[in-house]
Length: 263
View 1 (tube, rainbow, N blue to C red):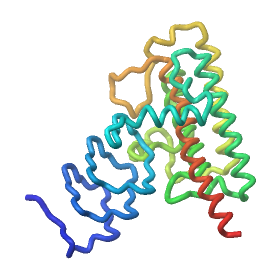
View 2 (view 1 turned 60 degrees about the vertical axis):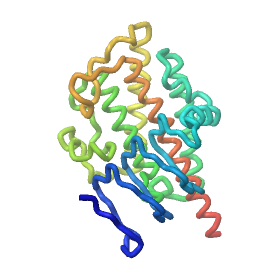
View 3 (view 1 turned 120 degrees about the vertical axis):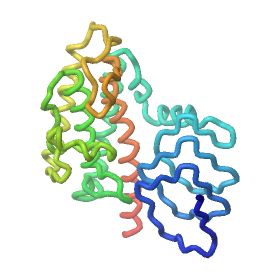
View 4 (view 1 turned 180 degrees about the vertical axis):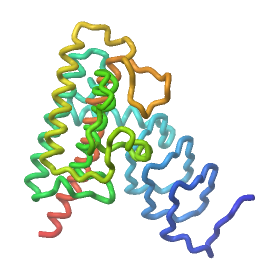
């Protein structure tokens, strides 16, 4: 039986948490200021909608707006804004490494901006998103999974304070990760720098080898039997740094605007 909600139902501010709305229909519905976090909307269809000032971050492969596939347009613009980003997916390790170099320089610039804004700005969350410090902890988690665990074969690969993606949170205790951990900024910076140095060492060790071959293994959150080429596993590091830089830069701009308004 289908439940229908109409104009007399009080649904303002309703919260849907882990709800299955597959096949739901919204017609003449008011969704002002609605927010979707960590939600899945493959094959969503929107007709005659008003998306004025909408803000979308996520996997947009195949998304069409007014009949135009927007993913290539978005990728081209991001690559224009961030020279070096495009090489993150290269099968050539030298190009990949250059992309990571560029990403880390961009991260250094971001951290300098955050430090200039206010003490502790790296710990401030905007609208429930990860702070800069939390984002670095996630990048450590990614490097632990793809490089230390996957390429280097280290069983005890994970930093205790790494941050996983939301869907994997229930599983990380088995990896020695403590979701309640509260590392200092200095610890976080040191852990990130250590993992980056291991990534560069992997680039050195893999030079001249067959990087199209399957990686020894991939992170434990992937289904058993799935494989990735060595260059793909290593390339995740640059791609993750570019992707998450986009998010922390967005949030830092919000913090800077709030600081201007407060003056």
